Image 1: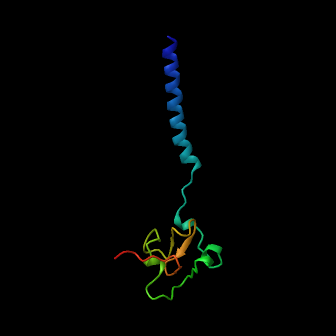
Image 2 (image 1 turned 120 degrees about the vertical axis):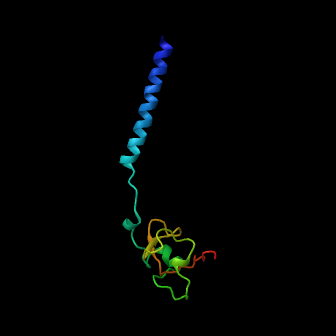
Image 3 (image 1 turned 120 degrees about the horizontal axis):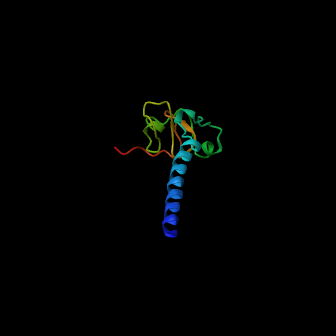
Length: 102
């Protein structure tokens, strides 16, 4: 009889824990949308180190044609793998530029 109550208690705690974790993660973790991220400043230390500019003068070489940029291709400011937590100008450029494969 004691084994059955131990199993029942184990199952109750397990199910309760799973429910608690799933509800808790929805309440505690707020997803961040690209529109809420700050724009990368040319004065940012990492931007300076990679010679980032908001307007490329490199004729066709810009963030929009780089394989490191993410997000909606029609957006003027988009997330970049090089500058996490910030948005780069799609017309910008930095020394980490890697052209998208043709």
